[in-house]
Figure 1: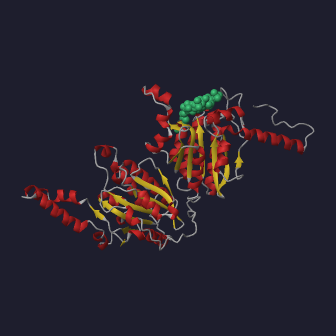
Figure 2: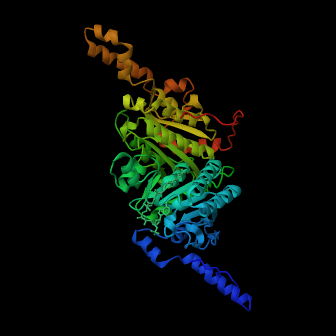
Figure 3: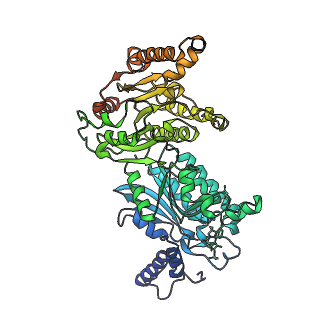
Length: 527
Ligand code: HXC
């Protein structure tokens, strides 16, 4: 591929000749190798450039560093110095808004990352941060380029440092479209959102061969780091899709809901007349009986414009729902307990998922609506040993820290610590709204009566009768929202059918909210 005279001018020199040679070279850098492109397609994958065409607005891609090639030496490197060095980088538009992109090219050295490859990624990450534009990485790589040794590791470090520097300043999106091995896996972990495609994508720190050598465990690529593992078990992937085309379309969808940077407002659409909107379905979806399940996503769909929302981590920690949507044209983050999964309890993954989402929304000025129907934290040794205290504290921390407009809607029950954590008044929500179906208390009636009247019940001639009496008294005292409303912990008790209207009005009331925190280097979030 490399010839000493590759760029040498022919004589006589003319602009026509130079332009012809330039055009031929340029074509060579963009078409790639038919054999390896074919192998890529046979694996069910598109080439890096085809992916960028799918992702970006037509004809908007401005490529940078297409002539870059490695300057290293070593086996398989000495005789091969392909242009691009296995990654296509530049800027493009998504619905007319600028983003920066890099797309790894598996057909060149397995998309592995050497010094030149890394420097190209550094360059677009720097430009994205300097111009306040989202960065989107399409990963398809065998990890650190083995022959470039420590230079590859140094390249990764530079990427990770830039991810952290850009965190909370520009949205960062990682899309896994092939292997994403070793150090490469930390980009998806550091990004705000990670997309992955079934069958073709695998993500792990150490592959099956190393796993077997170290521990004797035999495991397939799919079992170790396939899309469903990361979408449903590890929680590394935010979105999982069956094919690349849908995946890249959804990246566009996500970006349409995000501001380009933390100084910009989220992209609003014209108001949809939500104020005054009556939603009769809301009075039917949520059963009055506290233990009867229903799908919180039906509530979300009634609250948001056109019933459309983008749910994060659909397959992981599904006992809490996190979604981005628009309410009255304004981008809003919704967090809700999900009664159809584990009765909507908060556990370790749910707390982690919701905490990260709350922090993302806060960093990018996206108001939060929290829909509460929570029986409490999941009890048990497994949860305690897994650190539910510190993970639950993360969610608490995230809400306490959030300065964006915050509205809490208690749609049914809210018990104990979980009530506090789900954006209660005490931790700083701006407005707390409740439905008449409410039960806001330290615990449910049965549990409360057992604790408070254990001795009396044991000594009673008719324990069942006394229990029923005590439960009825507890229900009359606490199982309604007015106890909290009388004490100002709920700002209004509303008819469920008016929820969309009241939430929309509340968010518009809070739009200009400004809150300053005391100066500090940074807080110390629970680990
Ligand atoms: C150099 C690599 C490479 C790598 C693949 N290739 N990975 N070259 N460095 N890391 C090359 C192959 O030699 C091959 O070249 C071509 O890319 C295609 O690879 P295949 O193995 O033929 O493809 P496939 O069978 O699809 O397997 C893909 C793969 C496998 C699963 C990714 O290549 C693999 O296991 N690679 C190594 C993964 C790994 O352990 N990486 C290092 C991680 S350590 P030819 O010339 O034959 O076509 C790491 C440390 C960083 O990243 C830590 C930072 C915190």
